[in-house]
Length: 275
Image (cartoon, rainbow, N blue to C red):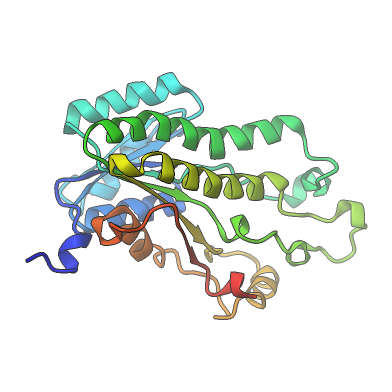
């Protein structure tokens, strides 16, 4: 009889992770490998395979990487053909890639405001975060649907559930028109991923393809103390997430442990969206 822990196992299974060389992408890969699976990192950076080899050193080399432009279907198809050639199939897709432009004081802050936000930035952010997820799911999800199923996980955000509280970004002494804000595209992409999740979950339900989203909160990565203080005041648990704290949720959603779960969003945000 299969135990509950057996359902978390990914031995012999392959999971593709977009934006796999980023801070959380690497942690998603670790979760896959720690459960016995093979992680394939897709990223726009040229040395994705080097990053993957480094991550795989302590996991029997069960990690590979490739430079992939997820806004280009041909690039996705070529990379996916290489995955199928190397592994014969794929079990999971984690749509993790996204632009997240930082508000850089040296460039001023007014560019981030809704009234000033540039169309080319809008197009780029939507192309990577939303269209890229659509294209990857279209190529890889279709293969899953024709070959026994699989699991797709879209990495959304607490800001796909609620609007940004722009007060936490404020800078003393700046005119209102110069105040930094979280750019509009971040929320649009994350809300869109939740809608895409529900659409695909119902579209492929009879084909054995499960589709869910994860809405993480902010990860502590050395942000300024004043910002951290303002943000943590909005979080019932009173702190930001540690970088490793999403691995369990990712493994649950990508594995058979969540076999009766599809079209759902799992919020892991310290309780922020409760307030």
